[in-house]
Length: 417
Image (cartoon, rainbow, N blue to C red; front, side, top):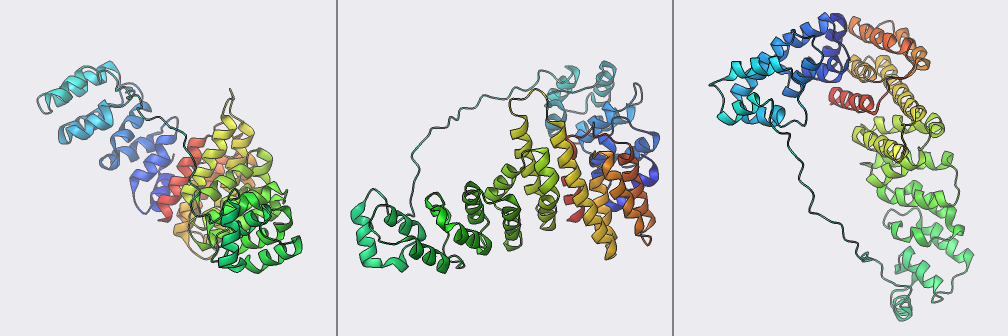
């Protein structure tokens, strides 16, 4: 990277060098002179893991500054050095570098640290085997008043409480076992009268809904402020062949009400298993989550999608990963446009920093170039637009990776906060 590009990235990360080193400079396969100069200038901010990544990208004989810094860390904080360096599963230092490191710390570190360096890190730590075993049990159905196997309890609850006091779950159970005479029209009317109330959670009733309640369940999914309840209702609506074009807006509607539940993240992941699904719904999904700064939820959703897609396969589905990268890139570009239009260059530069972590195909390059229409943008913004133009212009997404997506999520979260 050129110095001007690096300086703009530092500005995007509010003057902090380490995020730029971590998310951008040290993710390159090869480093240029300006990269090395930046790392050297900010070496005090780098962690041990950064130093080792820098060392892996140094030519033979050019890693002396890294070895000196590692020696300094060992002397100043031996315990942390043990944890961050010697206990790593694999340490890629050449023999001469180990010898140099040992010479620099001799007599200045505890004996065990020196012995570990002399032994080239020693034996690699072995992860202990887990002693935990999952034992299946019986699901506790606490919270349901009625049980379809207990006819007397059903009848007694109706008699003493009255139908208006029963939950929708209990009403469906009572009706199914013949203890409540309620025809379809009456059941629909009852459900419609309750579906806009925020007091009752219909999650427990989802397995028992008859198809005639589809409209009421749709309305309940729209009106509930509870993300987890919406996820359960969406799961049932999905079984009724309600189209995704209806369900996705319902999922997004909950984002304004509070935190996005794990259940809803899981539901979204199940709807996006293929490249075609990402091409159609990926951008709107990522954009809606980004609007709520739900960065960890985006990461979890993508991780679930990728895990399901790669399980049992020899080769990862490149088309799917490309589609995910495109959706994420276009969502970031929308954020950048909106920020520049309202003069928020800090957020625009944060988006450009995250965008530079991705490896989308060249079909995204036109959208990146369109950012130049903001002619009032500062030199730093223009520089980062140029970085992204360079990265996308001839890209075939061959280097696209899940790691790049994770880096982009961390970069945008770091800059936005």
